[in-house]
Every structure is written in C-alpha cells, then in structure tokens.
Image 1 (cartoon, one colour):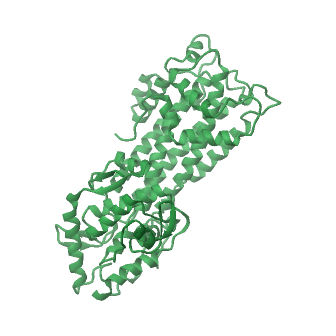
Image 2 (tube, helix red, strand yellow; image 1 turned 60 degrees about the vertical axis):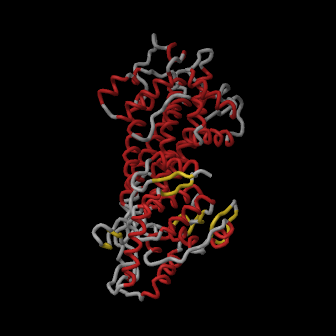
Image 3 (spheres, helix red, strand yellow; image 1 turned 180 degrees about the vertical axis):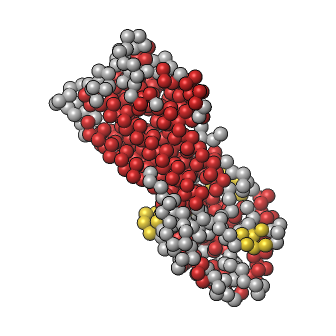
Length: 512
C-alpha cells in the first residue's frame, strides 16, 4: 500500500481529500522528528521535576490541583484514556477513523505535543497495516478536545478497546498483534496529547466539506438538465451578468452551466417566439444560489485546512521559548463555525433543487411536460410522491442547518464552562449530504424524463452522456412501478461521482 508523506503545517486540501476518499495511508516527513523528540524530552524533564505542570504531573480538568508522583505518571495517562472511553452510538466509519488518525499525526508533527516518536511510528503503522480503532460517534462537546472519541482511538494504541482488522472487529491488543504490532506504555502527558484536540470534529467537518463540494458540482450539472427539461432560458447565464456582480462562485457556476448546455437543440428551438419573459427563480437564479453556496463552502474549507495543520492539544511545548504552557487550542469553535457554514450551504442547494423538481412535475409551470412526468397521467402517478419525498428531505435539512455552535453548556464541574458543540455540528453534515444526494437524485430522474419528452429535439452532448449513464441503470418511467430502488440508484449515481465522470466537462474545484 502506498503512503502519502505529509509535512505538518503544510498539508493541502487535495492531500486530505486523498486520505478521505481513497483511505490513503500517511507518514510524516522525517524532518519533523527532531522537533517532536525535543518536545518529548522537555516533557520528560518536567515530569521528573518538582514544579507542577498541568497534565504532566497533575490531575486533569477540575482535578488539576492534585499533584501526581513521578512514579505514577504512566498510570495517570493510562487511567486518563480508560476513564474517558465513554462514547456511545454507532461506530465512526472506517475512512473517517483513518482521517482522524492522520489528523492526530499532523498535530503531533508540529513538535509541540511532547510525545515520543515511537507513538508517531505506531500510528503510522496502524494506518499502513489496516488497524482501525472502533470509535463510538457520540460523546464529544467539542471542547477540552474531542475527549471521548479520541480516547477510544487511543485505547487501541495501549492495547485496550476494540479495533477492526481485515474486516473483523476484535480486542485492540489482538488487532495490533495480528498485524505484527505491539501496544505502547504511555509516558508523561502522552495520553493527554492524544485526547486533547479537535481531530474527531475536524475529520467529520472535512468529510462534510469534500462530500458537500461533490453535491454542489452535481447540482450544477443536474440543474442544467432541469433547465433544458422545462425549456428554460440560458440568457441568465450570460457571463457579463455575473462579472458585474463579481462573486467567484456565481461566475464559475454560470460558466459551468453554459458549458454543460452548449449545443442543446432544445435550447435553440425556443430562442424565438417563446411567450415566457422570465423563468422562475429556481431556474433563473441558479448561479446566484449554488454559486453563493460554493463560496461559503470554500470559506469553511480555508478554516478546516488551517485546523488540520494545527497543534490543538494542551498544554503545548514551546521549545524555542523553553516553556510548557496551558492554553485553549483544543476548543473547536473554528470547526463549529465551519460546520455550520457548510450546513447552511447544503440546505440552500437542496432547497432550490427541490423547487426545480416541483417545477418539472407541475404541468402549469413545466412548459407542456405531462403532469408528474408520466406519459399516461391519471392512471399513473409518475413522480408525484418522489417530489413529496424531496420536500420532506428539504425540510429536514432546513432544520438540521440551524447553528450548533451557539448551543454551549458547561461541563466538568464548570471548569469547561463554554464548549463548541462542533462534534455533532460536524457529524450532522453526513446526514445532510445523504438527504441532499437523494434530492438531487430525484431531480436527475425528473430532468432526464423531461428531456426525453422533448424528442426529437436533443439536449447537449454533455447531458446526453449524463442521461445515457442514468439509463444504463434506471429505465425511463412509463407505467408506474416500485420506485424506491430507482431513487436509491439515482442517489448513488450522484454520491459516487458517476455523473461527474459522465459529463466530461471541467467543473469548479474546491481549492483556490
């Protein structure tokens, strides 16, 4: 298995995307080893000294005033991990758990955590050999670190907890030994370095970012198909309109839609003599809405790239200053804000997509398409309830888009009295993306059906390729049939990137 070599502090979104989508193993550039070991030596010296240093020779949180004897520092770190394994709920998907581990490596690689290189090496080997901790998804409030989920990740490092290896879940110690690895005994501060940090929240937010961007790209293609299906105008895509406003996402969205629709006979057929003056906003304002969502997602991306490269545990070793300092980099407020931003964007992409579906199934608005896109309305209901399903999903996403970062509550005997709620703020993005993929899948089916009703007029070559890809799996809807499998397959075509491959048109990229 190939490894991606990462330079802590300089990791790109493209590299993080590779880790997420392809489960690529990572290793830190060895140039950071000197700084990592220097910080570890300073922590070891502090542990042997008499001066209390938080988390090195003291208790944790509200118990920080309790001094710990040097002989007990290893037990202190082990107890920390075991006591914090309090997560509940379903297990984190493997690719997300691997992304968490990679992010923790990046944080250690900044040389401010005080862990030995031995721990870096073990995490790298766990990734390379496919030892993936089983991590419950619920239990973090996103401040003082993602404590519970990161504790479950760390439990495997010390031979506790559970891990998945070669498709089988087993005790962590067995997984390590089966893979030819050995657990480690934690030294001073090392347990705290593992669980103080935002890697759980950041991993889920990055997953929402990468999958959310894919939905935005799909929305550009599918909305272009919907435009042709209702014989909409391409005049609102005129580049000068968008240049006059100047927003990057809007300009790129309009350009992508122009390219996708280029050469459509359907479009050319109604340039003259069309009695409609303007299309509804869900057609006319697509660049303004989807493009704005793309801009918001990119703003969130900048925050998450910074966070992925950050040292986020506590205390931090400031080697050049010769200090070990308690701070608050574990507070996931930036991640919480980024997750809320992505949620707003996903909700709006889905909201305007749902209105396009409603437009296509409504014979009073669809410019002569049959009711509910069925060739024999009355006897058949066509896409009537598929549209209702998308309305339900749209509404669900609107509720999920409410901000999470504003919902703080004090924890840990009021020591941790303001928290970010970034963890479930980021986790809810997975559900929102799934809902949005379903909405776009239904829109795809409706648009394909609508375009086919315009025969013998043909759509553009890119959209012909898209429809051919759809029809390879899902036949056109004639008489009513059991539709649930069709909706699931359409969702998969959106989610797995099949449509983006089929269209073969360059689409806006996430990175600058």
